[in-house]
Length: 273
Image (cartoon, rainbow, N blue to C red; front, side, top):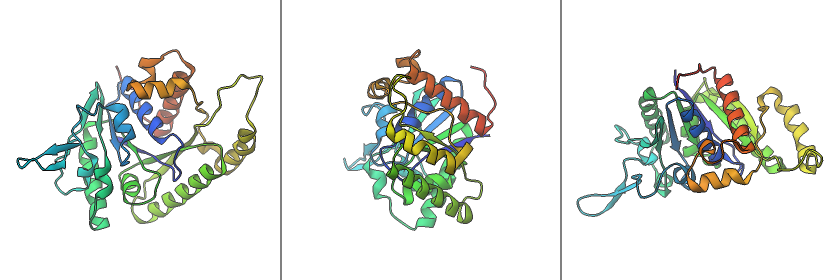
């Protein structure tokens, strides 16, 4: 059964796009069929996974007027949508985004219905759908949650990121009551470890906020903590998976460990590669 996971936190700068993109790559490399959907008008995950010259986010009609391209997630909000996933590599496709998605307008319930049914139709061909969400609450985040089974919440050690996490948890509870009873928080991943030696120990900020997270959310916090390694940013800039760019790096090891935990929590069986 397909698992749809939104990567979401109502605070920017916590690594949502990085986690969405790297986990999509990891799952595809393990043999799972993955559809990545960019629901953020900044289009950062799109830029990571696909070359701008190849993916069709915008097109021109016979009158040379600019129209929404067939690979653009804005089309997911249309009835009888003609959206098509773009092939990144074996087992990995993406539906990208640009500023066009921010201009989606109409009746909210109708737009949410269209998005849900389009994702539901597309997901039949995949094992996982990974949705990169904007941090701002609203239609783009809510539509992803309506179509999802799980929300994975990245967080940094800091007051504002944890407050954003609390707001996100509250919005999930509200949405469970009204629109998606099956939605669950699959876990919280810390994406703020400083690359330091064991002798240096934890930073003061980590010492302050790690116990707060553990006390409030307990087992929901993933055991894997992600460190801010330069390998991660370099892989993203080159459009490569961590397994391709630096397979033996600590960054790749941590990323793969997170994939292990996601698969365990989602109760997904292994596939033969």
